[in-house]
Image 1 (cartoon, rainbow, N blue to C red):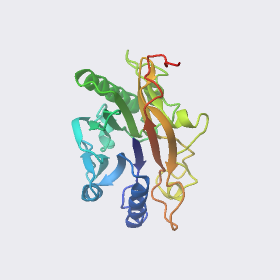
Image 2: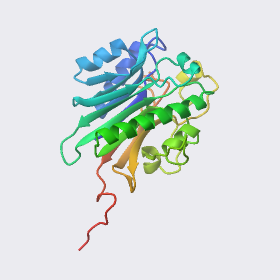
Image 3: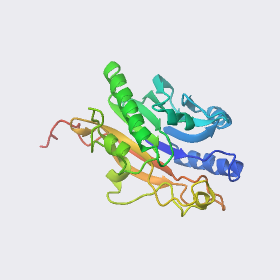
Image 4: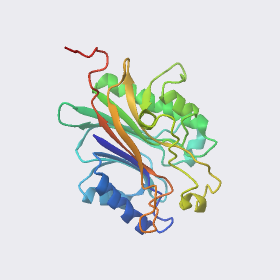
Length: 275
């Protein structure tokens, strides 16, 4: 199973038509099974549908029609959403939200629950991101209890670095409000110790944009839900995409992230049988 997440920068900025053409070619090249996109418009969503994608929009969009979507090549099953409105300040980050949807793959993979999480973006909103991570974690646990599936993947633009409290909670490094969960970071599993920024001043669109003094930040993730014995899926690869311009065009101010997930060599919780 291949997943891709990318904040694609709303098309009203920096020659959106050319950037969207680059993005469309990259999606065709990568051939993901599941796609999480942020900063898209209704027109972008319609283009995905026209290209054969099944699409679930996030529950809340900005007044100028910008939001996020979860897309898959296979039809979605049971789907739940939350607007992640946790404080008065989140009203100013109108397109945050979460979607959790089932996607049925052929055996032996089976049904996978894919969770597209988009918290508040401002640098100084880590308190909100903590609360939003907690809402998403509770949503995942609740739906897992009602409708158990074998595997759950959490992905998106989390607008927080790995050291932030919201990511520490999601990665099982600290508890919040009496709750603990654990999701394994696919990038760290494949590239231990490598920084892998997905938002960087090396990208000229970052320097041109509304965060011109941003330093390197890894804020886009693909995370694998862990059970008592660790993740139920293996990240066989994880890579950044659209890091360089295509014919002089950067697709976005973010880089994309693509991960290939497979079943482990043997099921977690059991010893491998050897003869």
